[in-house]
Length: 372
Image (cartoon, rainbow, N blue to C red; front, side, top):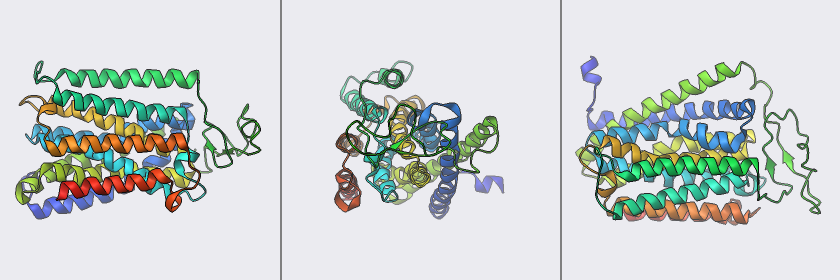
């Protein structure tokens, strides 16, 4: 019985596993959003940093496992396209989450210097990945030097963002629709020093209560344990999904770029999408945006993970036209998101802002090109 359930599975079982993993991921991600929101307050780190690092890591676990398993199974195209395809799909998730915040554009409500800098970090990491693919094809102990550079670049970016948070040189103008993240706030009163709005604006900041009734119960250790358990469930789902994707590619003849970007990328993006929607419905706007951007940055690190597990050379140099096209598409979508965070359009096209509409259009174009 155990051997019968071991991979590789039949095509029918593989498709069924895709659907099952997607359903489990949705349920797990809702719970993860609840735990992450409370932990952001308990730790005092705030939604931007907690969302981008810990929350982003937890929601990216499935993608990390998918990339590692695909690379180890000698499917480098699948591994690469899953990483960058997940970035495109997850960025699109912000447009989806925006539909659930009806008061104003999500990027307007969640403006913060940390989110802007995480966008810059993501653009830099994607650019490094592209440069590596066009650079010398060299490896040290089977790993391309770019993998080490990507990790160092990410760590340096986190340090820069942390320092900027402690000594900010830029602040978003507070408006009536701005939702200020005040870790540990117990009510709706403005944080000390906020003044209730920007000078001379005549507006009032929306300061949410960060610990809704009934959600803060239990010790911090138990919350961390629950967060870890949910993250593990998502990671196991990533393994099953990667095994199923290999079968789909080999059985159907579909390109690894299409399967990795659309099928795996969509399920890879489910944790961020569902968690972002759940965070928005809880009023945790900054957490919703930070989780997406932070998860995207970690997805670029997936390329380094895949490079380690791919033992036939450099993962960066097996990227074909589809994979490079996906990387450029992820770069374009990140630039659009960054523009939306800077412009902060309160109300825009289709009530989701110009960047939301553009993100949908760009993603549709990417899928269309890969499909045809």
